[in-house]
Amino acid sequence: MNHCPREGRTTREKTTCCVVGGGLAGMVLALLLARASVEVTALEKHGDFLRDFRGATVHPC
Image (cartoon, rainbow, N blue to C red):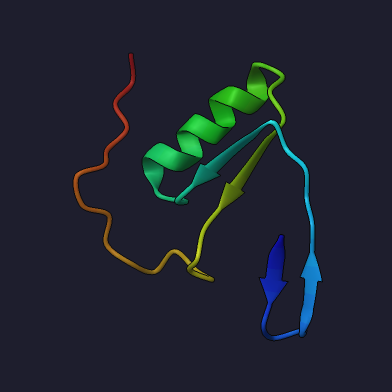
């Protein structure tokens, strides 16, 4: 169940996989799972990405 304090309503969503955290690692994981046809929901508490990422980098294979 999800509560949106700004709109004052609660929603319920069903998913196969939930990735909590929209940093680099979380977003790459969500992307890879979605490409593998896994129903995925990514959750991030910040409304923007104007913050420093520490300890997470993406390196090409």
